[in-house]
Image 1 (tube, helix red, strand yellow):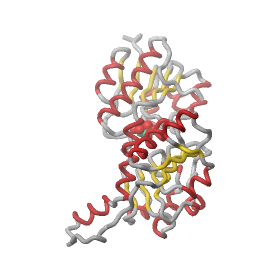
Image 2 (tube, rainbow, N blue to C red):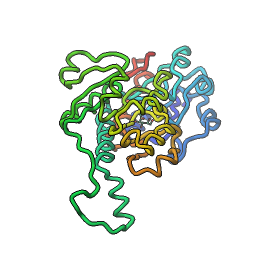
Image 3 (cartoon, protein in one colour):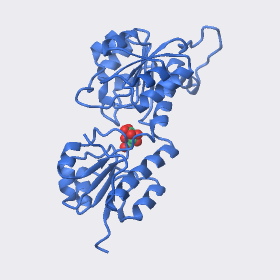
Image 4 (spheres, rainbow, N blue to C red):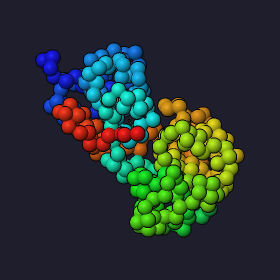
Length: 323
Ligand code: 8YV
């Protein structure tokens, strides 16, 4: 009937999450294989009470206006929300939620996987075998870099940064970190993590792993100067957002030996990857897979759906973004 809330889901989400949504309203769900062009998205949004979105959708004033006065909540199926103009929503009294916590381990696993892939040259080795190039074992063959005793520098010691630090501790690494603020003493102690100013961390770390959100302050945080400050033997890992790194500068730095290698899950202009990176062996690449496990994507979508259900039933959202 007309009184059931209208919920617009912009991209495919797992059935468990759809079930949560169907309990509270009529759900409009899209073609799973393609992102809706903005114009079409704005058309389907008309009259929506709630929207479930991903990073593919720009959630701004135009988005809210397209939905109209009934829109009460936008639930982002992601922890990062640089795709959203949160103040524009909050000004209109619209709740905005993200999915912290449920993707912490999956993302740290992928970050560590990229670190192992680049330091142990796994992609390069696989490409060699698949190219059917003859090879033979010898003691100096395809030597990589060990992690034990090396220093991991974490930029942004939030939930994912801490999970990365726990993995690194298990591999015998020392932890330093930097960020907007210092972590609580108990966190520093449990991770044996030492705070360093940004520049000092770049100079000190054997691996720099990025776990800060993309904000105007962190855009191109890792630029040509930052890369030059790193050790020539250092590796850079990025599983947060592509624009935190100046990708053209990174491609040059990797080519010229300014740093030793990189593991990248995110890119400045996804789905494009800087062509310079594709030519290099000292970079491990993944197509934005940080949270891409069946378990994690289900948990993320269910959390987003529960946020929608709570708000449409007149309750409080579970994981609101308040800034
Ligand atoms: C999401 C992510 O899968 O949570 C994030 O910030 O980047 C990924 O985990 C992606 O953003 C889809 O919305």
